[in-house]
Image (tube, rainbow, N blue to C red; front, side, top):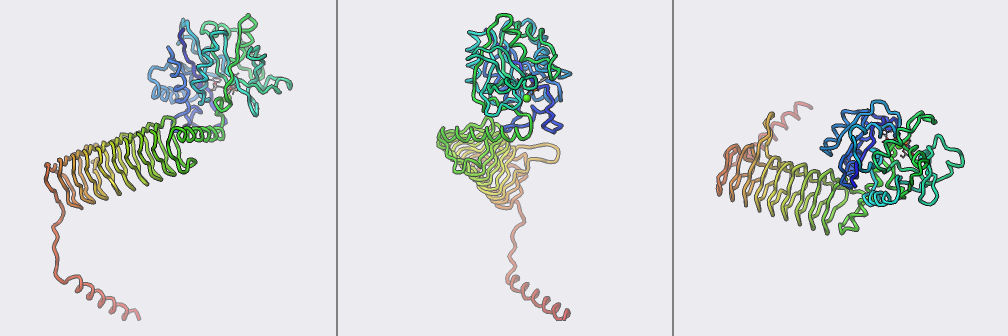
Length: 451
Ligand code: UD1
Ligand code: CA
């Protein structure tokens, strides 16, 4: 039996106090919506349908950025969660599999929990994901006996006795598509919010003699983001969990609370991550590498036993082979650094390809941008680039070549050659001493005049 995932993301998120649609606020370095899309992919769905409304164009674009076959449907007016799911009817057509409903603002549902929901569907017509809330606040309350669910009562519509129930609705729900749509058709908006509630499907289903079951997960997974306070708490929860996972997987963090990971950071065993390191999206680091303090990495790959930092910046497309050394105040962008090569100090390497065992001197710059276009610098194996060399791209330095420090290299350097391009040195005999004497006399004259 197949499954389609519907992600609800049409709401405005008024409490975010933002021009940006709520589901596009970043969490763990990606828009919140990307987390729901990732969860959706874990069930290998036949379809993913995102319901967008507020900020439709931006939400649609982000959806396509993270999942190029997801279908986006518009809910022009937000008339409730049931109404939102109903908007997917055309997109899902006569789909005869299940529909799993996720929320764009509930980013942490685990794959294991989704598997439990799928398993529970084997023995129930409708499955709802619930959790025991420490503070049930305004969540919908699940009216259940053991795991048999009768109905869901929204906070606004609940009696005092119903509000006393601490088993809450996460919003995640799963049922056969055709049945879910028929139950939604029967919902009404005669409630405190004047909305068509998806949650009303439970009572409608059970009234038709269908079985509804609750699957319970940890409250941390169902954390829904409604405000920036919630968002900050969600970020903190993500970081705390990820730091612990990293430590348990054999990575050393001296000061775990100062290291920030992205949703997809991959780090191998026996890596050392020093304090105050920030990982942007799409970073992979192989075993045994060290990332020293105050470094910032995104969109890059660091192979075994490399050392990066302190104070280094690896930008998208930086690819470090084994045993590479990238030192302080070095920026690498869209560049391959070959095995054993060293870029130790105060350097920018952009749009470049470096071979093996090459040494880049302090203060070297690949001048990759002419104001209009970007150009490539190619550097071979065993090259020695002297300090403060400007490599004006496009340019190629052959294997075993060298550049004299302070050179501005505008033409290719053949293999084995030394290129020097700077004004020749002229030593003027004794002039330094004479110059100082002259200056001292001048100063003495001036001081006399001032008195
Ligand atoms: C909903 C549930 C509640 C549950 C809670 C968990 C209903 C009626 N209530 O309440 O039982 O405890 O979530 O967080 O379902 N959305 C749309 N279109 C709409 C309305 C909402 O796309 O017309 C989207 C929102 O963008 C959001 C999600 O659905 O991603 C939940 O909507 P929200 O208004 O936050 O529901 P709650 O009142 O929190
Ligand atoms: Ca909500």
